[in-house]
Length: 394
Image (cartoon, rainbow, N blue to C red; front, side, top):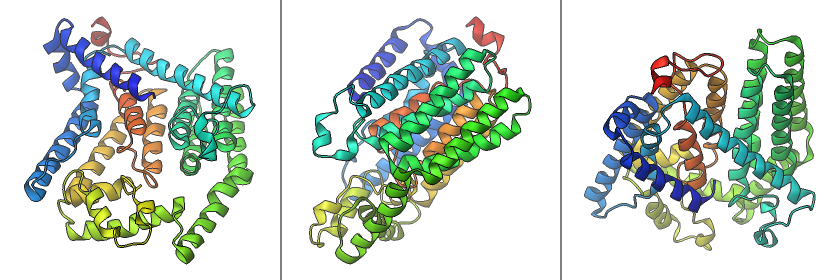
């Protein structure tokens, strides 16, 4: 969640994996994991796209961690070899995000100071992250993790604690952070959990009523909460009108400009795209004649699929969607609570990607790929998270 700490963690993981015993065997075992294989397939697509850029534009494209992050599931898979270590990694994320959640409430209640950036950007209040959209999505991930664990725990105190954590995460997203991307993502998440609770017939009656109450409370808050009406309905309408009438660079207006200028970029090279890291120079070139064009200048088109189409084309998008479909199929084979948590993680990524480029952002990218690196083996687990005897012996 913290960029320097994340980079240090990645470097240490690579060094420790290379220096540890049985390195070759550990890497071979990690390379057999379908998630690691899928990430490497996408890395190969990005490298081919980089070669396309080099041949077409005679320039070496920028290959930041958004390219090399595809190796993280393989690296961490060589270290987190057992269910115990993967659970520890997931628990570490949950504990860290719980502290962030409590600190956010502390800022909202005046118990902790706000960051200095809040004086220039009021929407960044109650945040510890670089910006509120990143923190909002991570809080939704935390709430999904808590609900997934609550459905399988047999301890009543633990279940109450997990439901409380999920409620706190829900309120934090709706009333404290007020991220529109998080609001959009919340709708399919609530629908998913409503379906899961109806389908989870093995739960006792108290758990069913508690879960149903949580979902109904979330739906009521989502429908009637003033922040959602203001941020998601009224402000979007006003921002759209201001962009159309006065070309005002509002958040919505910038997105409309980005999408409008990205479509011709896609149309000019629909099959293989323009190559890695080529969207930005092409977009900049297309808007340079506009007045105040620098206010509409962004590093990505704020839509995941549009970015892939513009740089990797229809072929690249087909591979990407195929990998997501394969991941969804793999997640469906997981035992609870992993199945519910990773299904929500994928749902968050897909929904938030409609209005943002998550893979292009450091915090979003690393949150998703590092959590995917902790995914367990499918097909042999139990409801308690146990895995094959062979892996436990390792």
